[in-house]
Image 1 (cartoon, helix red, strand yellow):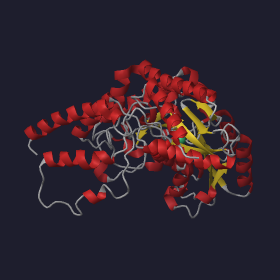
Image 2 (cartoon, helix red, strand yellow; image 1 turned 90 degrees about the horizontal axis):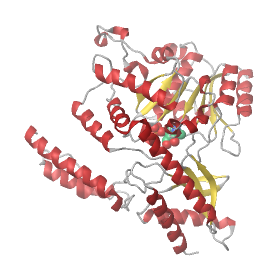
Image 3 (cartoon, rainbow, N blue to C red; image 1 turned 90 degrees about the vertical axis):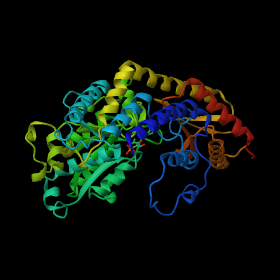
Image 4 (tube, rainbow, N blue to C red; image 1 turned 180 degrees about the vertical axis):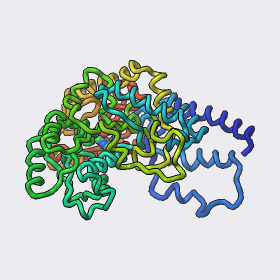
Length: 472
Ligand SMILES: Cc1ncc(COP(=O)(O)O)c(C=O)c1O
């Protein structure tokens, strides 16, 4: 492509991007396409000759766009949001244009040094102790995997990476029954095995019972097994449970087990001083992850991973073939040694743009507003005779169900499942569900960058309207 053509399309696309963000509210949040509908519009094989960009862009509009779920829609209340914002998108455009591969300091000094500084900023912003140092990983799943593998290596004196796992005996890991499923995936990959992941029961408030953890670890030690890592959750995915880092940390210290903290979603709320209760006891943690791509207005992917002892992490992951030796050697940070991949994207730039554009105060205001609107919605649901609040908002997540008079309890799960489907099929909102104490619950999270109070109110109207229209 000639650069004048690139320039013309780029200008057009920036207009399209601004128009999209302006009108996304009018689009259905989730498309009503059936599986295979998009694929059937795509040629079965790659084109032999190149095609005009105008044609490609037209196909983007007519084939791809109608098949997209609009994560940046202000009435997206499902899962946890994957945030974005205009300054973040601008940075991503630059990142794509520079297209740097930031595996080592030498391959992109500015990317490395900006990442180092962004991790210091983030650490200060969320109130982690000063000894934590960080790197940006793609996702929390990857960060937790790095933590578990580093923990495994510390527990086995690095025998795992030297000679394989066959000689190191039975390794075990721990998390609560409500922890994210990525922990399960990570222990599989780390060679610990899901059968050796102990899922510790939670209390009525969804928090890991530390006494049960203590019992499980002690029993494993007595049986000759080797506890490697505990993953504590701040803000579980189902219903926002918070494990006590003080109590869980105490167990970890007693048994000398690595404590990793998964605050993928809730971590952004630590910007608010009034939410720092979450990290009481964090000084006992060995590693900590949260995702600015969930609730800090920063494009996916961007996961902030902090460790107390980077030397252990580096020793676990470092490699140094002849062709990667550089003049600066170990006097600089080479982030390829801080995780799994060799090649790394320049992710720090979007954080820099976002934090500078909004300022810490601006980011705090956004998160505080989300929490406030979730509280307001909970009050409205509490007052509605035909709805039941099942989980009061914890930060900005709440759960409820439709419970009209005259419907037997046994029929409520199916009724609420129909309500959720119909509400989502309307295209006006997108919400997901969970199970709480065995019952089907509609799970509602406020956290989209473009969401305003009115969108939360509109969502409630949609839910009520759809509920009343359901055949019983
Ligand atoms: C608590 C928690 N941990 C981990 C994850 C996994 O996040 P990622 O997609 O960044 O791997 C999620 C995803 O929603 C989550 O809610």
